Image 1: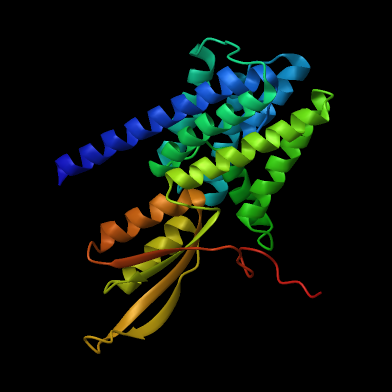
Image 2: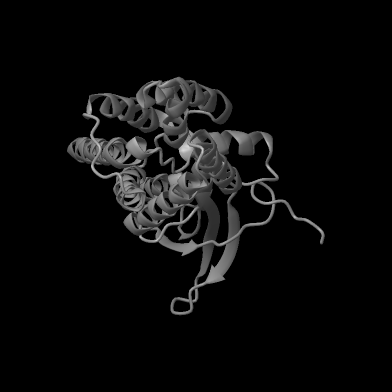
Length: 285
């Protein structure tokens, strides 16, 4: 059991390191030289550098580290060491990777920058971490404004950053290319995580209902709903748990369920929209 834990830790660290490195490569070689800002803190850092020439690794640290501390205070320790590790490592790679303009073609830069960054972020999420940024900021804002979902805040922040890039570069085309890069980044992340979008629904059949639901609610700060079902073959009554999570919580949810009940039956479904407490507000038209 101890060897298995060490193996999982090493694999997780390797995934985080490779993912963060690829993200940094996409930013330094393709996006930053062309002021393409595909949302998030790093996108803001790219646009901000255009104004006062502060290296993006410094801006990344100045925003993400206080954001992480605030997240721990407000949300608890659920984001953990992986987010802090990835955030600091990203700034390190952004500093040591030599700046080089691979292409001045904005379309090529937005495409390849978006794809490489998407692969990197996908690996980071796959390893159960995040790089802070809009994921963390969205979760914090959702805590104060629960009528709007984390996904809403993430998209709003990304849109503001994309618009900001166009303003500082004095070219509306910059915003358009930033949107292309952002779109490709999200799509590649979805591909890496087997089609995962902003929200996923977990249907969990387990004999350890109380324990699983308690840990999910405590560590993810997400509600859990209990359904009663009957196995048509065995005719036995079964408990079914429903839990809706956002993208960064996907891997963590699987780990929680598996650590408590290795025999649990888990189904994951795509969620296009959730209306209600903790997500989108119900409005009357």
